[in-house]
Image (cartoon, rainbow, N blue to C red; front, side, top):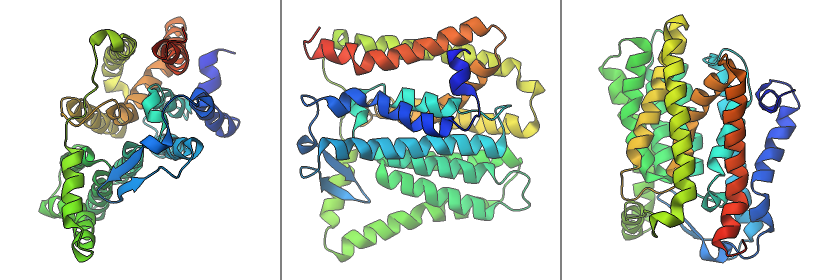
Length: 337
């Protein structure tokens, strides 16, 4: 049995294997006592404020990244099972997401983007469920509300709100003013609640500071040489993305109408996530959001491309990079190699 087939099948063993693979991708971080320390970490978002994690163990901080990542993985599985835009039920999107998300060791620790990703996936599921409904007002409201919650964890995710009415229109072919209104009304509700909470408790200046921190410059520092492994990895992902996109376009007319529209919406989210990379406050964590639509694209390509050798080869490359970033690259940077 091929390596790709082990992770691609819909067998029950994957419900056990998936969390194990996620834990293995974090193994070096679990064992590392010289890496990031919980005492140097804070969790800052508008909805939670600034949480001091100095009293939490490294294990606890890592688990608070692991658990939401696993939740996202199972949501990816659930969405495909409900809407079948990949022609088979497969665990591959879930495995690919973990490989992508945990490639960067900095994302082995708690980060608001994971919690934002959960709410964004729930919003996408709500949007998809509006297909062929007579009215989508409730879906528009719920998707707006969930996107608002995503933005309260990771501020940049608030920009996805423009995609809710666009996606509803792409899916249904027509929406009215009520869908636009309820989308933005639902989006504002969690923000109104948050502002009110800060105002009532006299902490409005703290919220302003958190928002200012959320849009402050956060690009990686250092020379290009230091980031050669990341550049190579993202280049490989880019190349596979281009190849997979052409493959999907060639199959476009053969798909059901619903599948075409679901893929179009995923493209909207993917393109918007790419735009995030030019924002000054965005760093490597945005790859978590990029990975959500990207996993479906890669899964479609790797599952159905005719030349199985290349499917196995590309999948092996992704696994190799996941391993390299956990061990080889980090050891090099710590002077152990």
